[in-house]
Image: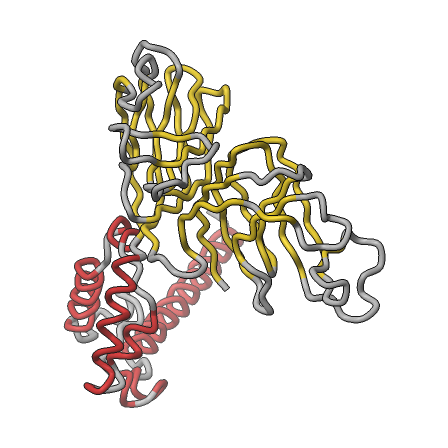
Length: 354
């Protein structure tokens, strides 16, 4: 081996040794930096000593923090309210405020509790088979009663699917003596009589908003049918704006309407109404909502109704060409109307607020 080759090998060996020593020093310096890291309390303050800042770098943090966090999560899960319970128990907020005002307000609180019970909502899903309709004149028909006849006022929504096209039924009453004067009637015993809202959908499925003292599904066929449904409803407390009634129309007092008939369900008011009416009349009717009274100059082309020629209301006039049905409405008055001179009878359930 020549002197030149030996010299080259010697130089390479020296360079490799220097690289090894340098890298070894860097590793030792890195470990030193890690072992002398700044403590959490110096970086973030004394209060952060026990805080978890990542399981890998702060594995020495107080393990009770993680235990406490797990415990809190378990408590939240245990105290969670089931959805069904929440939906079926709706108590007004005012009740809790009344209780917090002291013992002198407890009587008011009890009234609010009674109000809440009367306004509880319910959602029912069910499948049933119809039975022979027990009403006189309906012996060859089939009936499935969803909400039975009651002096309570129901308001809600029915969504259904039947084995054949069905008719939807709401009852209003029971009627007082002499109130059955032309409108469709349903009676289970020939004595107790209800006015009958009868909606022939000619469909086997659908959705219906209703108000009444009973709810049913019906066919005119003698063979039983099956219906599956979900009904969401409330039992409403009676008031001036929540009621079932029967009335006979009178001559319309408005100028230009002298030959018409009118039955005022909710009288004109400064405060607007909003709600639903389900009705059954002795003939096809029009539905009326009033808006106003109008200020000077506001009556400019829209239909107008005025009881005295001075006070004027804008007139929503819906010609249903039906003797029964349901209408969701809003306005300063609600009425049922015909363009015929002879009086008509209308039975109804209205659920409205102001």
